[in-house]
Each structure stands twice: as C-alpha cells, then as structure tokens.
Amino acid sequence: EVKLVESGGGLVQPEGSLRLACAASGFTFSNYWMTWVRQAPGKGLEWVANTKKDGSEKNYVDSVKGRFTISRDNAKNSLYLQMSSLRAEDTAVYYCATVATFTGTTWVFENWGRGTLVSVSS
Amino acid sequence: QTVVTQEPSFSVSPGGTVTLTCGLSSGSVSSTYYPSWYQQTPGQAPRTLIYSTRTRSSGVPDRFSGSILGNKAALTITGAQADDESDYYCMLYMGSGISVFGGGTKLTVL
Image 1 (cartoon, each protein chain N blue to C red):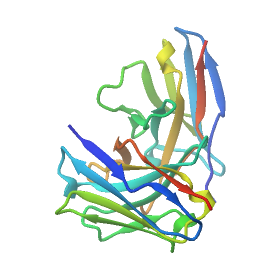
Image 2 (cartoon, each protein chain N blue to C red; image 1 turned 135 degrees about the horizontal axis):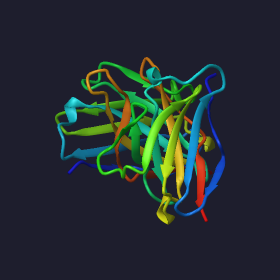
Image 3 (cartoon, rainbow over the protein chains, first blue to last red; image 1 turned 180 degrees about the vertical axis):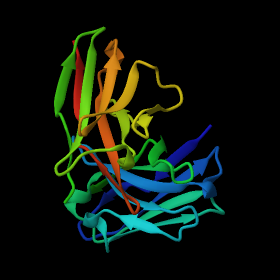
C-alpha cells in the first residue's frame, strides 16, 4: 500500500523558515517524480513544486521561486520542502504526492498524503 | 499568466447527470495538457479520479468519466449519489514540469 506521511508543519513568524518532510513507503520511491501541493484555508489546490526521480530537475510555481527548495533523499525514501522568507499567504495545508508519468505519456498526481498545516503569523 | 477555469458551483439531483468543465483563459484544452480530475471532501486529502483526459484511476466507479467537450476538458458524473457531494478540481500539465489547478467546483447533490 502506498503511504505518504507529511510532517514538519507548525506556526512560524513572517520571514521565518520551516522544513517539511514527506516519508514514503509501499512503492519504489526513486522511480517517481514527487510534488508538493498546498491549499490555503477555504481555498483551492495550488501546485507548489516538483522534483524528478533523481532530483536532477526541480520546478516551482512563480510565487515561491527563490524562497522554497524541494529536495529528496532516495536512500531514505523521503521528500522535503525547505521554506524560507515565509509570508502570511504561505499559510496552507501542504500535501506531498507522487507524480505518475508512465514514461512521458501522462502527468497525474496519483497518490496523496494527508497533509501538514503551515501557519505563518506573528 | 495561465488561468484554468472551472464553474464555481454546480448542483445535481440524486440519480442525475452533471458535467463539470475545465477551460483555459486563453486557448483550448486538448489531450496534450493531460487533463486530470481530483475529488476532495472537507478535511480530506484529494483523491485522484481521472487522468489523461479519460482514464479512471484504480477503484473509481464508472459513473465518473472524462472527455474533451469543445475546447474544454469535462468530468461527467452519471447517476449522481449523495457521497459525490464534494469539491472537484481539474489540473492541466503545461509542460516543463509545470502544473496548474483550476479553482475548483463545489458540487451539491440535492
């Protein structure tokens, strides 16, 4: 069974930093692109960042470029999101998800964790 | 800036059929955007329903179907049930690793 468990959320002051982690199990982690998606309170889903299977490619939504860094440790089956210069508008539940590409014939966020809440407030 | 458009809300009667759409602020949606659809109930993680326009994810009932209608991607629910009352999000792949979600449609079954 695929399992994704996010951790590291919490309350942080504006301009502060936080590191989220996503522990993966039940599948071959190194075979999958991985992604972070967030959802502000009462709002819709927003794609945040993704990373290629080997970590050699990383992509970000414009609003977090230069502030957030996605990384992965395939030996530990773990995905990370280092967040810095946090703003009130970064307040959200952050989900990690697997990205299924089926060798380039599709692009879908296939399996999701339950999320971790990040609150940015003074 | 690419904006993916969805109806903010929709209602359907139990047993009825409803079609939700997913468009682009500029241009047409085609299969090359690999449209996918996600269902989310309050407090829960999203659940993947449809990918590559029309392929159902594992375990998704066949009353959910995907298609391209005109210049939009579409999610059709046939024989709606009470537990289909959820938020539905479409996502389009823009290439180069960039994904964009629509604003979501709140579906009411009544």
